[in-house]
Length: 175
Figure (cartoon, rainbow, N blue to C red):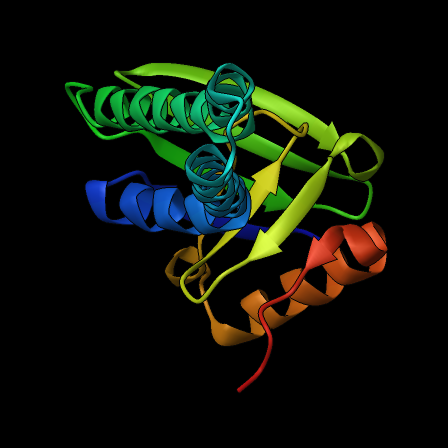
């Protein structure tokens, strides 16, 4: 059984993925850094030993906040570069029983990658797409739901991913 999907990378689906990934990964770290920074500032105000408080403010919130801002800036730059290809990148996903085959054409340069389900780190479903992460730090492959030939193909792909990935397939909660 093969289920096919064809996705053309665009600013819209890249932005949707960026927002999804920011909320999933960077936002919790950012919130924690801001809270630690606020706690450090309160400690600085209430503490008589100012030297210790300045160091605490820097390490508790300042450094993590700088790291988050740098990560945010690097990702934005990366996503802008993705959309600067002469022609949009086209991905064809073939969901098979043992693996996912991803055929890519970027600037008329084709490539093919096969990923066994056992080597895929995690797959997330969002409102508009399915994001395939090959490892914890990599960018995801964006598989638009609208790229399936029919709603039955989408349902079959989700069922296959759920069976093969188990708890590593994070489905969108039904509302």
